[in-house]
Image 1 (spheres, rainbow, N blue to C red):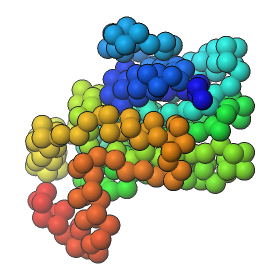
Image 2: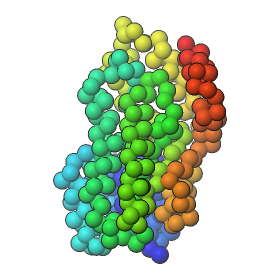
Image 3: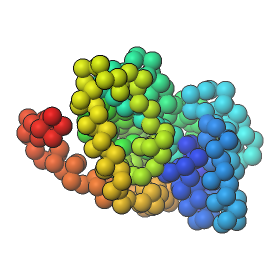
Image 4: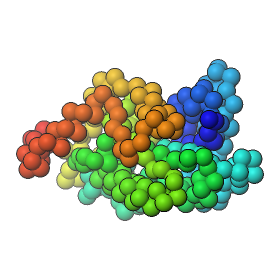
Length: 278
């Protein structure tokens, strides 16, 4: 059955690939992004594959922007079957070097952005066909690392919110899902990442550790073999009702870090992590 699907954060990465993949499977996709000047890659893919995808502006931090899309969907389709909350980015740096404004910036998109969109889209989802909300979380929503307190916090908050929402919306037959990717070679860990303005100041107490962390992350990113299509495959299965569980982990580099953290006593894991960084 053809689903009416809204996806946020479609200018690149997971959002772009999900929009193309789901449209190829016959679903009606409304692909949104904060800045339409970044739509070129998506539009090229749409033309290349001769797809019917509607591209719209949507800033998850601006209620008026979200409402315009709500009104459009209500007028044209009268319902929404699947909401994919994908928009997000990372703020990197040790807590001491990050500003309160940088923390708020992180939470406004990754956490409150999901709440904003979900709140305003809920009346449309209540009219949907076996409606689903798919929130794109992260390995960072389960495992914390030095220098990741802003991003980790936003994803941990998203995890808690999504689990509660699943319980609540079960009564309305709306299902909530979490997709938890490990690291993937997307712009979220590249050009879209924000490094706190004081983080790389050599006079700061944590500069030695921070610079070491960034070098390790850069080396890891260069070695990444994971493909965004792995995440899109999970999103597709959830959309089409083939996955029922709340949480789905994905990514070839996911398992080692996750299982080390899950199986070791915390004091041993903490010692290993400190040894590795220090």
